[in-house]
Image 1: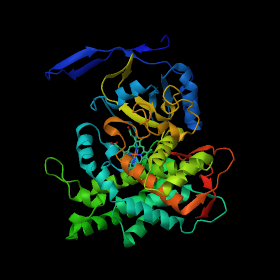
Image 2: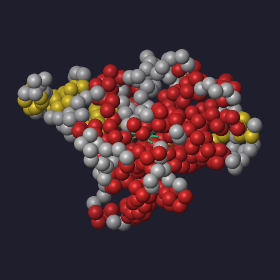
Image 3: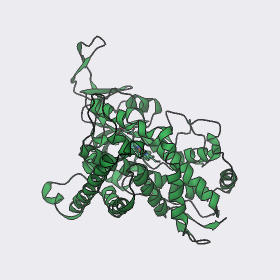
Image 4: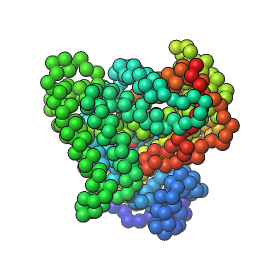
Length: 454
Ligand code: HEM
């Protein structure tokens, strides 16, 4: 507390319950943080953001940190305060800045805040309800079988790339409704584009003169090729007399309207489909890669999963998915940006312009909520729902991941399909190290396993 800095006292303007303007004076009060020069904090974070955050926990569950791209930040690893962040008035705090929308376009849900964000979420939510997702189960199973058809037997191979292809194809078919040449075109354009975009994400957007060259120029080329394919796909849905019976997200979006009767523009649809792909492809594949890495090192878990896969049940598989997401979290932060003059977070008062980073990975390692947190133990979730404040792989509140059910059902079906068709060897080799791909954390060796066809 003694290290908290009290700087300035901006006026805060807000509406009280009667809608009247009220002003309140709030003295900025920041949590403690490492007393290191900005450049050193930044270098530490870039070198290893996980290690940096765990080292800073000595300052408490909420601390100050200067990080590249997001700038002056407050990191939150306290579940109750994470809830305050997630449920805050969206006019006070919005999406973290900058965010992926600088690569995805201004029509992406990542770019929207406040009312615009609420309107878009309302439009996007129905296609991602459990009922809609059930339509996609066959797609998830078919893509797994197609990918696994040529898996080598008795020889170690990384699962991450196969999982990337499964999750990419699943989104292209279920979300974009792509088939035939469109599917082929998107499959050709998107993987190198996502890889490049993911690598460039941690870097600030360069000035135009640099953006016209090198990797940024390649990004722009991928984008224009993509736009041309999406344009053709939208024209086809519009010309299809049976499009009302289609279940893909593109067709559902083209048939829905905002409350005022207006529809999403073509460019917004293009940006949003790309957002769904960028947000849902690598995250789900990385989690699946970790699932194979984890279960091949835990014979008891693997045995139970294999036995259950021959039944219609999935209680243990679900518990395993929850535990993989906790024990090997792929997205470490859910970020917000302070727009109001000050934002109150427990005893702290954070000024406008600060980023707030909810430390998902750190919350997942709280011994208070998860006894022996380093242990991989799906049993902790059998018959027990995960604690909603500290198990948050999908973030929370108004910006909680829209694809959570999609990802969960997809991971369930992929695991079930692999376990039904293959016996996975167990291994005593040490767990794979964690590798940062820019956005997601993946198993360093790609989640290698050895399988035999059953
Ligand atoms: C295991 C897989 C996944 C993980 C771990 C994951 C994680 C996350 C996280 C942490 C956020 C930020 C939430 C926040 O700021 O509070 C997010 C947002 C989002 N996710 Fe996911 N996600 C996954 C799969 C998917 C899938 C499959 C889709 C769609 C097909 C998707 C679409 C989105 C979208 C559109 C947002 C932005 C929501 C908004 O800003 O309103 N995600 N996800």
